[in-house]
Amino acid sequence: MMTFVNLLLAVLLLALAAWTTLARNMFAAVVGFIAYGALLALAWVQLSGIDIALTEAAIGSGLTGLLLLNAASRLHVNANAGGNTGRSRLRVPAALLSAAVSGALMLCVFALPETPPTLAPDVAANLASTEVRNPITAVLLAFRAMDTLLEAIVLLFALIGVWSLSSDPHWGGRPGLRQYSEPNGILAYTARVLPPIGIVVGAYIFWTGADYPGGKFQGATLLAAMWLLVLMAGLADAPPIRRTWLRVALVAGPLAFIAVGFLGLQTAGAFLAYPEGFVKPLIIAIELALLPSLTLVLGLLLLGAPLRGEEP
Amino acid sequence: MADVLLAAAGIILVTVALGLVPIVRGASATDNILAVQLFGTGGVAVLLLLGAVSGAEAIVDVALTLALLSAFVSVAFVKSYPAASSDVTRSSAMYECRA
Image (cartoon, rainbow over all chains, first blue to last red; front, side, top):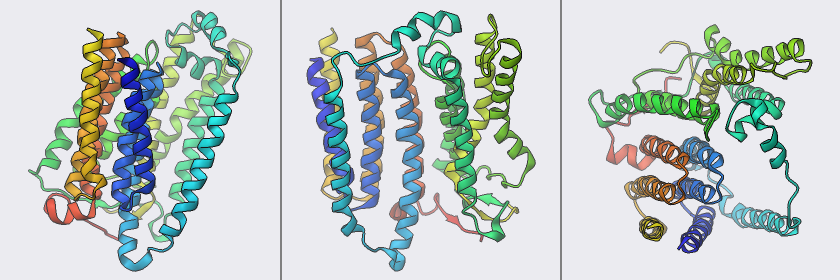
């Protein structure tokens, strides 16, 4: 029966992938992509990669879905204005390129040795020294903490890249368009009822990350989604990117991470090494410092470049 | 017992897949939004069933995340879908640009 469910998942994934590529209507393609993300989370669960399933459900399906929706909505406006050119001509080469990449990846998978090289036994053997029980968190914040630090900084660079797309008069202003909704409508109601639940779930996913699948990235994604929901309903407005508190909050997380790194230089003899007995508290301190920064970065990345001045 | 749960998961997957058929045949804005919602709900149900079969409690957390974000994506869909924001929810999805 398990084989049947797995086969069904595989067939559905392939069908959705084909549909997403071939769909003529941009919004239908985005529907296909979001559904594909949800299915991919199921596939990762079946492969026992629950951490990846969580990330896929949060970022792959949720936030990327919103990003594509915004892009499709903008392109739609441009297409109506007569800017729709060459989409069908690009489709066949794009499909061929995707198929070629998938084919090459498939060949690589088949070429892997019977027992692939893995560091998993080493991680399992040294997991106790990190005092956290989730091996993924141990790898991300103890064994390979440098990668995570650079990831957090890359996100800031991405945000600067997005902001740099703003036109001169709007630099420092508020990102995105001001959203309005009926004060007593269903949208405003949803944006009032869902965020309290979402914030609790986001905090829980963050907190459980030390010992079970979860962590700051998935938690921050949920918190960012709830913030964006409030903005979409027009209950609040995005802050102008000129604000000092905003910029301090954005860099506070990575700065705290670097500070802990230098602390390691003093106390444990290496950058980003943790003194014995303080590993788990320090890991949680880093995650706690990164959570608000990541929430803001993810939310602001999706809001895009400033489109208006500072006035609300 | 595990087989019954897995069979249920399979049936839900097939049902959700059938919900996509109208979209492939060219559907309205509302149909697209409903298909996404169906995928969110169906995905949560399948995740919970798989979690019960495998005994991995963390799968419930994945289901929670998916449930929250599929509701969020539905709202985003209504806000950004041009046809929907002009016909279906004209009054609730108005936005303007203050350039």
